[in-house]
Length: 68
Image (cartoon, rainbow, N blue to C red):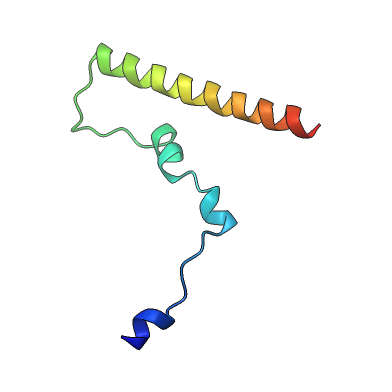
């Protein structure tokens, strides 16, 4: 019981905060030959990538506008 109370709580580091694992994996992953490929899925993923890129650009613009 003492071991449970004496453990240090895990804190989020700056490296973990800026980790883009899933987002980076979405943009830069290899093609899976087992995944079905048709025009609807390609369009959906293209629009998703575009919306993520526009969102990140808007966040960067707001941060730059705020601090400059």
